[in-house]
Amino acid sequence: MQLPQSPPDPSDLLDRLTSADPSRLPQVLRAVESAASAPYLHWDDLRHRTPPDDLSLQEWWLAVKWARQGQLRRLPLIAADGRPFRYSLPDEVLQLLHVIDQRASGEIVLSETVTDAGTRRRYLVDSLMEEAIASSQIEGASTTRKVAKEMLRTGRRPRDTSEQMILNNYRAVMRIADMKSAPLTPDRVLELHRILTEGTLEDPRAAGRLQQPGEERVAVIDPADNTVLHVPPPAEQLPERLDRLCGFANGVSSGQFVHPVIRAVVVHLWLAYDHPFEDGNGRTARALFYWVMASHGYWLTEYISISRLLHAARAKYRRTFLLTETDDLDATYFILYQLGVIVRAIDELHAHLRSKMAELRQTEELLSRSDLNHRQVALLGYALRHPDADFTYESHARSHRVVRQSARRDILELVEKGFLAPRRVGRAMHFKPTPSLAERVVDRVA
Image (cartoon, rainbow, N blue to C red; front, side, top):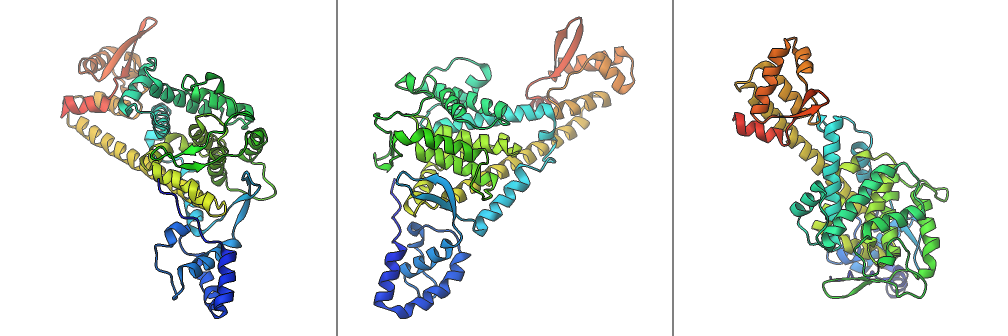
């Protein structure tokens, strides 16, 4: 990939400006106010745009850097050379955080599709599968979504390394769902990495283990042209850096408030920057993002897949790391991109749920025009909204105040049409909605 051009140093720009033409300085200072509210562009993007107020590109960049300087906040993430990462909270960031706060933590009335416990489980499993597949594909897994989902649903053994990566990812995100209330510790990070990389490493001993002093550190390489994109810190620093990462993830900070979503995104950046493992660093970084989000009550993130969107724009995802590294460790570029991805994932989930609810209403309308009686229509309507529902002759009879014989006739007719599946529980017969009930209704009733 093409590396972003490193920005000119603001101190050098100021020295040149004051030496060559000090009369330009007031005009640059006047541009600082407008630069503070402008889009948060890196020099590599800004240099292709037309500067305002007859400024040169270098003068415009100087105004931009001055505007940002007073807004930057220090992070506990430190580069290998001792410089701190910093971030800013421009209006773009604040607006995206507001949307995520509204729609990923406190909003309970999404739709019946997610508020019903049985349907929530089904959507949660689907979202965990999507995240496991996409996160593995970012790292090179070549298995298709269809084949991967078939493997995860049936429980068959993986056939190759790509499928093993996906199975590992699925186990890891399930583990996060189980342990989201627990604090993050170095041992839990190592456990997560071990789950993610089991059976996929050239050296199996590297699973769940930091790289050691004396080992060649694994740099980040562009697979397209073998360009070195990032050289991580020395292995000697890794144990202490991982301790600090966990403290930050758990909310320990030096007297300043860090928004929980910013905290989750920075943990993602931090693990990726440290690159502490022989392999599986990206998958571990994205898994830790989910852990931090879930631990701070952003329950809706369990139903979205950020990796699917990141996989669709892998070059842009990688570039945001480079924008941060090349502009004086300004993490705002990475934060902005990740917040945008989260909002897009939430939007897609809402659109998907609206579509599903519209399909549900259409199916119920179709049922109302079928030759089924009103009791059967009511039972199937309930089954469509509650796919884990369980029916018996007795429950159906009580619900509609009919004799058992009528209830039995209603249910057996629905079994014959393929809408319900019978099973014996002890001596009693129970009936559950068949898989893909809505599609079956459309096929049989339309």
